[in-house]
Amino acid sequence: MPQRIDAVIQSVVGQAAEHQAPLFAIQRSWPELVGEALAAHSRPVRLARGKLLVYVDHSGDGFEMSYRAPALLRRLREQTLGKIEELVVRTGRIASSASKD
Image 1 (cartoon, rainbow, N blue to C red):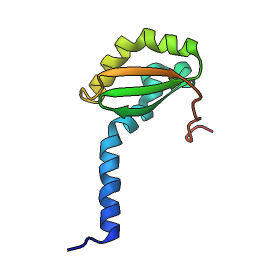
Image 2: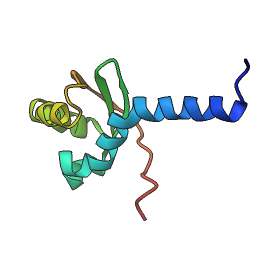
Image 3: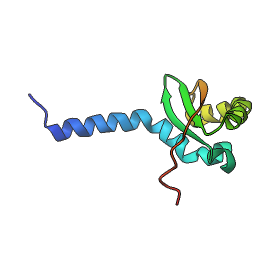
């Protein structure tokens, strides 16, 4: 029997939200995890296959993020119950957060 389109959409959106819940939690707590100064110049953008991709504004921010990686990974693993195995840092343009005024 065919499913109603609204039920299919609701199911797909629910599955996507459940899959991305750890990333959303990290994004919400990012300033507490890395500090306000580094959070202003970095953004966690993707979590896939145990790898968290973080964009930073400048290579210096990337160096600082790499320096902090061991401690940050421990905190991220605690927060996500072990879903993060690796931190990947890339230099690039980060979008400003919609929640900042």
